[in-house]
Image 1 (cartoon, rainbow, N blue to C red):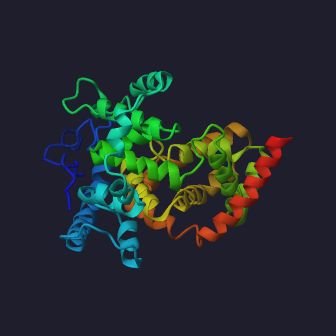
Image 2 (image 1 turned 135 degrees about the vertical axis):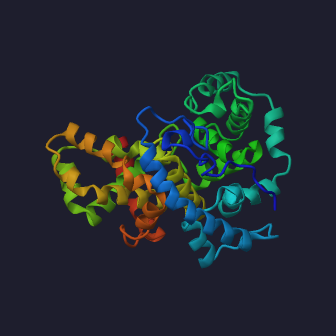
Length: 347
């Protein structure tokens, strides 16, 4: 099994005061804001590092000498408890089906790079490069290990393979895998199978899932749903960014990585579990809203604070608080909601 050379969390803990011990740049290259709470971060990380160490030992024993991953109840439990950074790219590739696609299509990625590319697509990609994680040092041209060229290649190849690419998804995958071809096939798994029609011109998949979320809130948090109806707030207005960004740049990066661990293994229902947990935890604040701006402000607060920063506890919550959420339920709701959206667009 190939070992991934990724930065592990905790590398900045090396003595001194809290602010001295933690760099202005996090382990993934993102610059921390001026008001970053170093004391709170160190407190959380000192606890989480114990969890990470235990999980890393268990994962290393489980994967020792293996090149394939068996999908079973034990592996699902392991993924839900978090994949160590050194195994993350391997597990994402194996559990999402991306590794199978790579092996079935040897040389395909390189052939896409070598193909003639649409000038307008290339121009669009070039424009997006400087917009992709501008606060991440790994995408700055002055960085010794600048990922912009790799990002350009992945987006150019994916644009040839499927015109509906997303630069920040490719960028986030590169941060973790440090590998163009793996990032390409993970992008294919995510946009082609896990989140179909999220990024197509009509975004029908995204619109459908926003309606599905509304129906789930109606059944699981009816008072919140009623507040939304009373104030005339659509789910698309307040939660579409959560889904289209797959929580990247919405929640703390460690929490996003834990979500993506489960997303590649279990599919898109994880997005709903996260959204339902955030809404349930802040139900009182949402219900107290007296206007549309109040509701929007309440939803902005949902993605901040200790609840989402403590990624291990938060992930435990998403599998407990929303209750049962089967694929069959989601499939049925998607059919109903998609029909409603199509009918509305036809009128």
